[in-house]
Image (cartoon, rainbow, N blue to C red; front, side):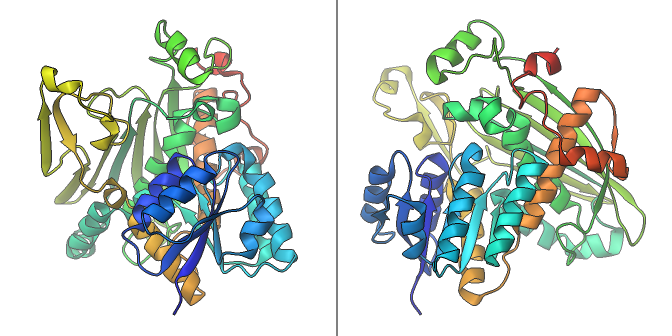
Length: 413
């Protein structure tokens, strides 16, 4: 069987990380890339890494005609426009076997629904890429504890955090283009993982029903001088005019529809975590058992003294979002595998090759978008939001947070 030919739309940070992960995946090549910038460099890197004969295509239509599956790794604010072009290519005869969309599916519920409408016009299998669901430590913990979960009862509390010092590119910091701040960027990860951890073994991803959310957002670091000026100088984003939250936290209550039991998922996310680098921290608590994942605990540590520090070319060789190149560094030998990128790619490649649905689909991505937007609405209103209320659900359909509108000063008091 021939390898699945993947086409990437976007050649930025996430495309690079996915390409790194693909080194560990059998049955797929990077056959093409379309991007407004960085496409030539990405193609050269893919070829050098022996990931496939990656060609640069000048349009989405040409890419779609020459690959088997397309991955949307472009910025959030162009997703609908790009998806419209994919639909036209499919209608024009492109023989695609699947579509991938990186998290979040949409910046708002309306955008996510529009993307699904467009997807339905193609009838194609689809994968929503939420890498943290696939993390081996999470999967191993839940499998290891299956006997306890069945005999003692399922997890009753899941706490998930993702924190680092801030994104790589200006559009991520811009709430009007990204869709918000750290809650939109990383809260979707933590909410998804908490929901998954609380789901009984063998049940679908949306089995546990969200019934309420309480959330709070704040701008704790990047609105202060000199950090605001630093952000403006580095990224061209002015938080004096259009601020976004750099800290978000909240709790979602879920109900088991079979037993009626209520459980809780907590999420915490920040762009102001100045330690070794990116940290994912998850723990699950059940009756008589628990587990914890902390990605800063590594089997490898490196120490670099002051005199030797000048020789370090790139701090991120040690860890994503690393902010230091000296002292005691936590080094992860294979971040792409640790964070779940390898496993999500394996799942999508196998699913598209076999003509079946991947583990997480765009419909699931829509539900995550709803929960993220509900968290923004809760924070804006300063109250616990009843997710079982039809009025609330209807409001979410047309809701855009004040922060995403560029009116963050009104929300970040």
